[in-house]
Amino acid sequence: MDQFIEKALEWIAVYGLKVIAALAILIFGRITAKIIRKVLTKILTRGKIDPTLVSFTSSVAYVFLMAFVFIAAVGQLGVQTASFVAVIGAAGLAVGLALQGSLSNFAAGVLMIIFKPFKIGDYVEAGGTAGTVSEIGIFTTELNTPDNKKVIIPNSKATGGVITNYSVNDKRRIDIVASVSYKDNLDTVRKVLEEIVSREERILEEPAPTIGVLELAESSIDFAVRPWVATADYWKVRFSLLEEIKRRFDENGISIPFPQSDVHLIKE
Image (cartoon, rainbow, N blue to C red; front, top):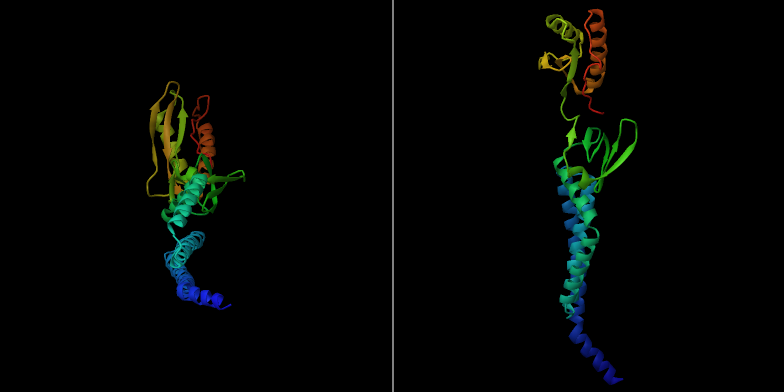
């Protein structure tokens, strides 16, 4: 019994302080990690970073800090931590290789949140799909197409090509090509087109509309009609102009070669 007590006292003398120190490292390390997480969260929130990214970043930082605290506590007990570091590094490498697609999407999501090429509600063309942005996530972006289909695009694909944002500017130019016959009088055609544009109240005065001969084609003379409108009025004005051009051409005996006006549409 005396020998057991002696051994116990010897063990306490050798390892007691180390255990206390390890516990202290764990306790104070955890408190410090929580404080750092709160401070990081406040900084990112004040920087108007997306809440999802704020939560994710602060959680990842907390996990890394706690891993460091745990390794430090174990090392205080005299355990060789090199093996722990090697295991954690190998595990991190394996996870990284397994999730390289997800990590790529995450990195792209972070860049989109920081640089904001588009926001929720914008009509964009990205990743080979056009639609209204309904959600921007860490890994994917969701679009609603004009025919009300939900399309989920991986962020890496969305940022991997050209992004066209149709909503970011407050003005857009309408491009219409109106083709007429070679026998029609150019001055008459121009006058009719100018009257149509001047009567449309939604067309902006600045920049001024452009009307002119675009091309002498094989079987027609092509007029370019390029007025500017508010982005919200784009399609309404475009449809109205096309109808009015056909109606006024008929009234003035202006021929529209078959096939009719070569109109280039952007699918929205």
